Image (cartoon, rainbow over all chains, first blue to last red; front, side, top):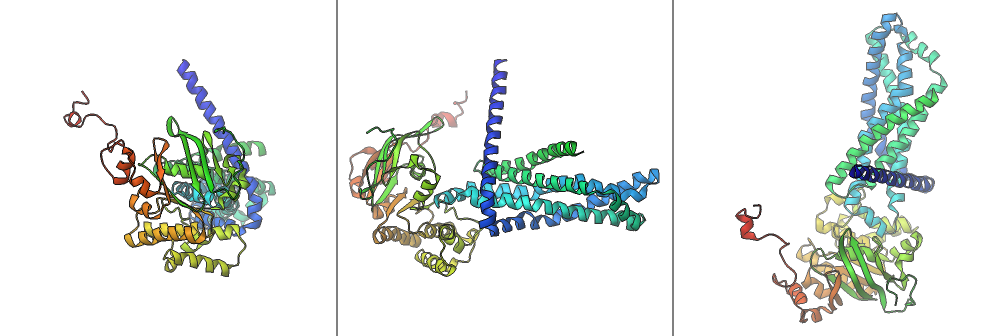
Length: 257
Length: 281
């Protein structure tokens, strides 16, 4: 019993300590961000390219097929109620409010998040971060902040692209293959999607961008500097980001409903 | 003197001691790396840290540059207790250092040229033209001007180390620290680097600290060697003095003998018993 209590105490203590360190780390990133944006925009643009442009293929392919499957499911289920003309509305609301931000964040964690964690972890393992420290260059400012900002900026753009391609995929499936009226598809969507729905999607994409990026750089920066440690950090990035995004999605949706 | 005390010492810029370590204690977990270590690096000299593997030579370099913080004792750099420096002062101090890491530690996303230019771009507002001149000069000194456009992944281990050396000296530091600079170099590169270490020290009037196992090479460049063992400085002096020392430990290390106070074999059960499988019975 005593051993159990000791285990609970040490686990809780470790959790609180790590959570506190994470918050301080996040504040350090925020503290350096304005200066980095103003003085070294080139570094941030390069990371937007790495996190954003290099994720485009996976985002576009997945967006098309997610939209396509929504079109299929929407058509099949709405046809039971003779409401297949509303498939555009269903697909648009699902993509803009939920699936666009959430799936993009999960794909981002798998593609860009893992790349960030492993890159930073390897920089640590090969003494590159120590070398920067020795050259009187703050690695948090020079390495982590541009990567964090790159992810934060790239995520809403990727969500927008994912959603647009998803709508296109739904249009191809439901209009071109299943003969839903093209006018009804787009007009129903236009009538039922409100600005608030788009704002919710944008808000989620920004929150998920911040969460996925800060977790990726945190895990990389705190990786044990060995091959195994970097591998673990990369895995943790995907797992923790996925859990955090889904929990936050629920909380934001509950608040904004 | 209060060995554990803090505060500046009145060494001043003219003192011949550039770095002074007093009663240093540093442990990693339960393992004590240094206990009561005292050491002085003189201005303008090439000092070498030698010792068996695992004695903490690289750790000592990291303590001197405050990448690590000791549990007890004081490290003075140019009269300043480095533990009392804030972040800005620490970075100012580090700008006076150049460090060559064991594995080079080149930034893998930058070309050789940009790696060497990195400190200049971060700390100066020199024009691209001037940066190009300085970088090419430094790369020429290590024989790799022709590799300026290559990426670190395309370099051999020895070449990477030479690029890292060019980067370490690009800001014309006052102190150059070399962590195992001779490992993995072919004889030609080794000869060039050994001469470069000595010449830079003499011509530029800098102070150099070399960590190396290579007794023969260190003996040709070092003014003073420190043999570190069991968390302390076991012996110090010129390479000739160390070679002539009576201490068993010093003789074993300097002459590479298998038998002596430092065991070659890690602690293990009886060899024959283990081969016969009796150790597990």
